[in-house]
Image (cartoon, rainbow, N blue to C red; front, side, top):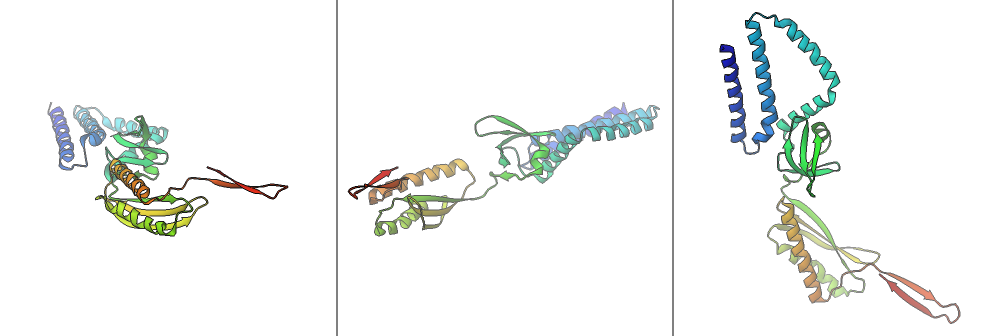
Length: 261
């Protein structure tokens, strides 16, 4: 009876420890610690029952030896499972991501829903659930977009050939003005970058001071609409992919131009 009471007491202490760890640290929630909590309670019960059997007069030396030999056999047969288990401890203590983070690893991307002893479950952008083994996640590169404090954005605005030099000089100023109008955007630069096959390309660089992808897309949308309106007001045309084919007559020597877009 005393042994059983001791086991229950230790289990209660272990459970209280994990609950306190979960509550004292905002980034460490109970669902993330649940597998480790269950494993720890299992170990406590095994140790307690072995102690109880020893006190009842059973020879537990042979049992422990059998468990050791069986453990080696199981370890050899379940290397993949043990790899996932060690991967879980890596995720738990090193914390490359947490529940709710949006991560990308190889061709897998999604928000972390659950971290288990063997697998981690993600929710993709289209709504499907993706189950990935912990060893696969910890053995490769993990991009955690939720922890990104700022996002560097590079985008291009393409103007049509035939635009006057005077209007081309206005474009960088217009782009800078549009970016600076956004509170969450830190303007870097805007330049006439290159001559394309069918366009004059302007490159814009700025930083988004937020990790929220939806807020970034809302801001980019406002910028695109503002650029469109300003170009319409200034009479600046966007470039459209086009080819000019010259046809020369064999007899008269006359030539014609055919423009296709």
